[in-house]
Image (cartoon, one colour):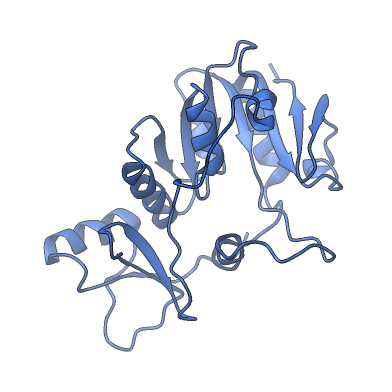
Length: 237
């Protein structure tokens, strides 16, 4: 597991009580003069939440305005839309684009993000997108799956696989996530097992087309696209 990034809260973006509440919610300190950090949560120009990074580049934020899902999206077909799947647990939500795609297809999605500050960015991005359809929960996905009071129809996993040495550099947002959160399949087998014990109908894992199955566990079937592959797993009793 990658070390936790050092996140602080901007001391001047909001009134003191709002700043203190946000700091308590994400478990991060309020910035002090000269403090060291990897990212600083601050108020953006439009009033939304963003994470300023030390390199001074464009801040990280959740922007769903360019996510335009289609009815025949490969992800929607892989997850089982129209095949008895209605409730989905996105165990690795990240910037929320796949959760957003599934929600726009009419699915009921719970998005889980292990890093509280990233979960808060996701909530803010969904709010700015004008939807409350996605429920966002923060915490380790294995623990949150164990807390479910009833099984969900499908569990979705998107491990941040490392960029292929011969591929073009990924978008800046993904580069930042890999820097701040780590990349790879650190808890792949354990998370896949927990997902298969929590799903009623299927577990879907997003992979690079040439990548081996997550944790070396063979999939029941796969849907192959030009840039991604979706491996499908049957639930475990």
